[in-house]
Length: 275
Image 1 (tube, one colour):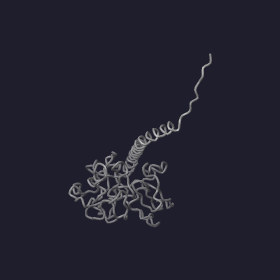
Image 2 (cartoon, helix red, strand yellow):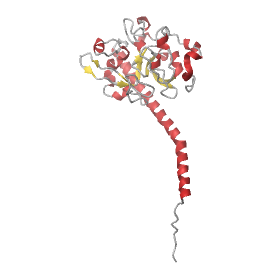
Image 3 (cartoon, helix red, strand yellow):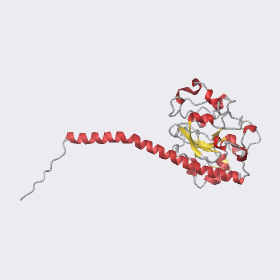
Image 4 (tube, helix red, strand yellow):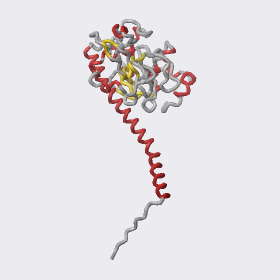
């Protein structure tokens, strides 16, 4: 008795149906996969900031609680314009063996059109000299420092000396004070007394100049906000508008932003998720 096995092939219509089903499934799955990847990068960023918390803690422990000064004449001698970014040299022993710590996983690529970064691009430091006199090559980074932390003994880039935190020991509400966070520039020190320093961006990643200090941090990098390391060592996500409610310097008014008119915020911030 012979068994006959049919070798029937798929018809063109059946193949098209299969392709259509696969395309439909891909259309459903791709946004979900993209969202998962973004969440993974945000989680990796937060993990890195926790490592930075240890680096900052080691620095203050070794310096009687004091933050870096913000001033290195050798940096300026190379045209570095580095008061906002002096931290990269001061904390070098903590990151030099692991330079990827300087880069948020969501903003690894340096901006090909300038030294400033964006919500998805890293900024670039200027070349500088170490205390030893050795020249250092510019590093790329997608984090920045709250420059009000610097232990300066004079006004620093228009920021009043008396408003600086200077030492971790002077901070009473450390859970409300930002130290290190996602950024498109080396650092910044927003304050209400200068309308340029505090003005919000009109689009995500807007860059005008280094004087627009809040713009350095006011990014939608992680689903409506940025990751922030606070002075108490904790790390959290802060939504864009809530950045104006953090205690940036010793006399910073954390309630002022609540009374800002819609026109001042602009159209973009009214559409950021969660704002």
